[in-house]
Length: 145
Image (cartoon, rainbow, N blue to C red; front, top):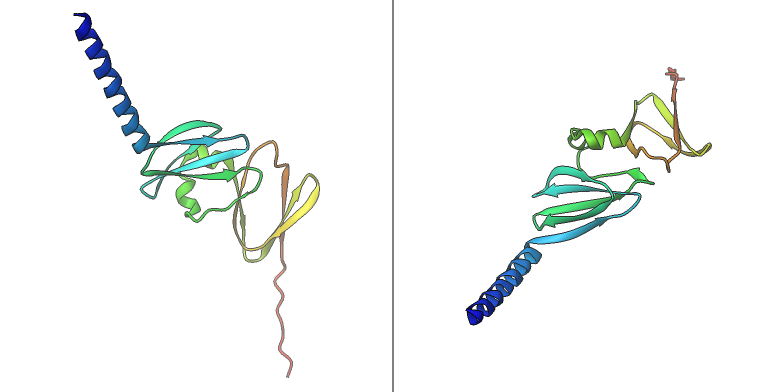
């Protein structure tokens, strides 16, 4: 029986190492650090948002990591991403019409002027943003002859 037990242990070790090898070839580890957020895409389709932690992902899943101290810029249509309630709650979306500008302040200092478009910024305690909207008066230009 002792010989059989040794044989079974060896088989278990061998099977265990094969499972680990298979998992390592099908999965990858992703680390999201402080002041980062990860967006998971599976076969190019957005799935979920990741907060600070370590994650194991399948190889058909890709993670785009964003710095939450910066403006949120993405190549994916913002409306698609905002369907995720967790991500929508993590972002402040600023919409600027054609006849408007928005002044963006950070820590009381003017950071930038936003012109017509749609912008997204991470909500957090690091980004001390304030936004002020200003409407332009429409002027009629008369042509001189």
